Amino acid sequence: MALSRRVLLGHLAATGAAAAAVTAPPAQAAPEPAGRRVHTGFDRLAADGYRLLDGRRIGIVTNPTGVTRDVRHIVDVMHADHRVRLTAVFGPEHGFRGTAQAGGSEGRYTDPATGLPVYDTYDKSGRELADIFTASGVDTVVFDIQDVGARFYTYIWTLYDCMVAAVAAGKRFVVLDRPNPVTGLAATGPVLDRKYSSFVGREPISQAHGMTVTELARLFNGEFVPRAAGRPVALETVAMTGWRRADFFDATGLPWVPPSPNMPTADTALVYAGTCLFEGTNLSEGRGTTRPFELLGAEGIDRRWAAAATELGLPGVHFREAYFAPTFSKFQGTTIGGLQLHVHDRTAFDPVRTGIGLLVTARRVWKGFAWRADHFDLLTGSATVRTMIDAGAGTDEIAAAWQDGLTRFRAVRERYLRYR
Image (tube, rainbow, N blue to C red; front, side, top):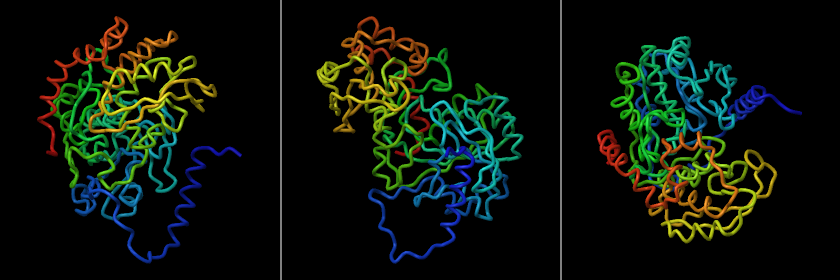
């Protein structure tokens, strides 16, 4: 029997509450997770008794990644704490509880676990989003979502849009930090041209930004929000402790919760800033498989692509000939050929250059290659990459074309970094 999303969520909430009511103390404390103990922005906010939120009516922008170290959702934790006046939840793409696929949301509903109203913010901006904040009755908007480090991952633009809308609605804004799972060492790839602004890139930052969400919020507020809203938002941020810029996610000791249905592991995030570009082509980017963005292919591709990619000598990655049948999205139910990326040295691996190299070689070895040009140009932030590939340019030549813009962005970015 098929269940509606809301009925299913209600059932899960009810069974979860029943299970929580029958608990016993553990025989011994659970061992500390492997890796350095990173305390997130929420950890520090809670440890301080929520003083930053004292007396305020709070609305929070979050999704399934907003969890404590023991994977309790922060909305459930805050709702149960008398020190917090949590009155609304705002869901991004995929929804607050994460049940929607790419390009979807859960809509407006009442959360069955807490009774809180959940407002849909997906792809909403400007006055429409400001009106949602006003209607919710909150005076402070809190943001806590795990990002993956790529410009076209929409949560950072939900952050930006909410900051702009908070100015219009007269709301205070608080951002709680979480790690960049692929380190915060480097900004790489092309910088967006504002003529190509969209929900996969509102403002000119690089394709892989190498920042955390509080660093991005500070950059947005210093560089972009005043241009869009007339003035900066009243912004406060809560930093992490224990995180270093060179940390990959598995060094943090934090649990990985998929930020979206096609981001199942931190390994996915490692390649995503490059291989998501295949969304802008007629090849499968691996959606509908167990390794999205690591498996790429199409009907008619064979071993020659993996061989051509290997010949590029890209650092830190091997390419394996692979065959797979996606269960949904492109080529659903059809066995197709392609390759799988195997990152063997993640400190040397450059996802953006790798993505460009794979596009160059795919176009060369497969006569069926075609662009979804409008979407591809939004992902790269201009038409330059696509037109250079069509003109026969190689990976190094294409990467050289974005260096001037990247150098300028890196200088701006440097002013907003807070972890050294």
